[in-house]
Length: 325
Image (cartoon, rainbow, N blue to C red):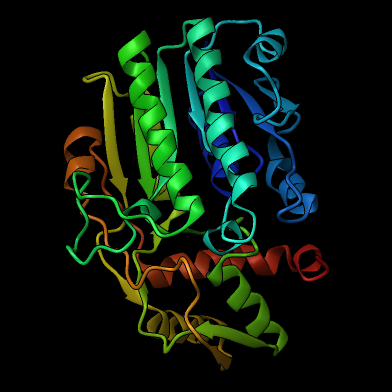
């Protein structure tokens, strides 16, 4: 039985990944690490893992990776581990500008702790959730992995640091380190601070939404199921020892077009409050995914409107919980 450690496993992407792994293969054991960070309510994370908490192949550890030493972690996880899938992070570009030190502690020190744990336990496969935000100010669209990085937020700089730490541990200890740069992930269980979740919740309630800028900024929105397939492929990847790979959808949607699509899905008109653009936000994200296709056979399938409908269905199903949080 393969044994994967998934950090941030009660969060949006982590819980979708675990659900898929447990459904696909009864021969996989998951140790999920999460600390229920107060960035958003723990009730949502409990909802995320509700369906598989009783699965005998699922183990949950409530731990903070930034303060749990590799030695202590080895005491909690004594059996062999085939791969670490490190998704846990202090999230959010805008909040990182207000408390950059907290982001360093969780995203850099936490990653360091996990790499030290991997080295001590002889874990040779490490998949790291990086971010498209590392590209920063860059108009060479679509972005390729070898672009010069110009991050403009503390969050982005911590993700770049994580990629570099992985290179160090690959060179020193032979750990295979695969960094996946996620591009604006959405879908069921999406974090409540992200635009699609916030917009749908507000529009359904008849409340105004905040639009930063004139709506011309754009993002490469990627459905969570496509991201999960990329993560699983990276976990199985064995060809080279260190890679950085974009996981996006390979097209960019403007904020105005996103809002229009949400209005169509919900059948309600958005009440828009326009605000100035925010520090740390980039104008556009757009992934070149040719490397992911070549190395991981990555092939995103979900179109925006279908993906939005899937999120909206999930939101309505759990509206009684989500609306009171």
